[in-house]
Amino acid sequence: MGSKSNVLKIRGLILVLTAAISWGGSGAVAQYLFKHQGISTEWLTVMRLLLAGILMLFFGYKREKQRIWEIWKDKRDRLELVLYGILGMLAVQYTYFKAIYHGNAATATVLQYLAPILVTGYLAIRSKQFPTVKKLFAMSLAVLGTFFLITKGNIHTLSISGGVLFWGLSSAFALTIYTIQPQKLLTKWGSSLIVGWGMVIGGIIFSFAYPPWRFEGQWSYSTSIAFLFITLFGTIIASYCYLQSLKYLSPSEASLLACVEPLSAVVLSVVWLHINFGLAEWIGTLCIMSTIFILSISNEKESQDR
Image 1 (cartoon, helix red, strand yellow):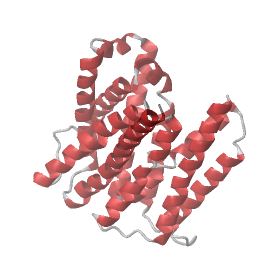
Image 2 (tube, rainbow, N blue to C red):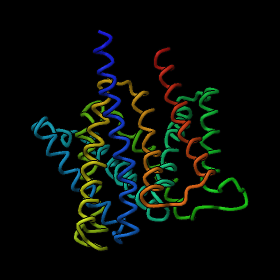
Image 3 (tube, one colour):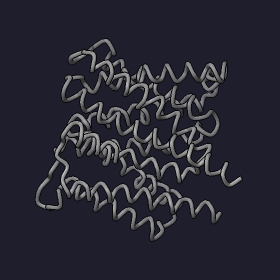
Image 4 (cartoon, rainbow, N blue to C red):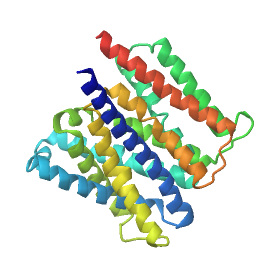
């Protein structure tokens, strides 16, 4: 029995690490498209949302059949879904890509991972409960990590551009909305259906401002491979692997292991794209990643105590 349990744990571990590395890798690949191929963030955002969303709904239809249309019959669910598509899915994709464009995938991904702290703060305010000592410590680590990341430890200088700081923090706020807002929809309809529709809605809305046929940049064989990687591995396969991992791992275990995402984004950006990432940035990254570990352990203990 124990052997079977270990096999299932290993399966879950492989799935969640595949998801995290694919997510982190897609950030580095997006940086390559922006910096070396001249692809616009707007075009990549709208194409990723539309193509990945349509593919996810196609696979969802194969499994759910007519159920994928039923969500539109409920007025409240319909409104929630549209809001999620715009304020959650579209916002988190666009702000993340803009942060990469103004800086690099490493810094953008690490800044985005401030979202768990924002989620914790929001839930504490909503429940009118003061955060525990562990959560306060995690918040302090996040602040310290951000300080090292954006100043390199020198309070008198800003080591990153105002653009990457603004869009990186915006991405963290967008990820907070993305995490909190669709909870009821996810429980009722399932993640693949909600994520698929969210992408399609976000892509359609964004198309009015930036039509998908308005291409900017240089198209080549490497551009095609990079775009397919972001769409397939960095979106569909990553989402599928993460959701499948929840069958074998607890949510806290999965979210803890998913913190490999910023680490993989940093390593790929340093090794492949040769960005300058010094000791202060590594300290900041480890501080922010530590907050995920602390919050995961804290949340798991709270769920066990209930």
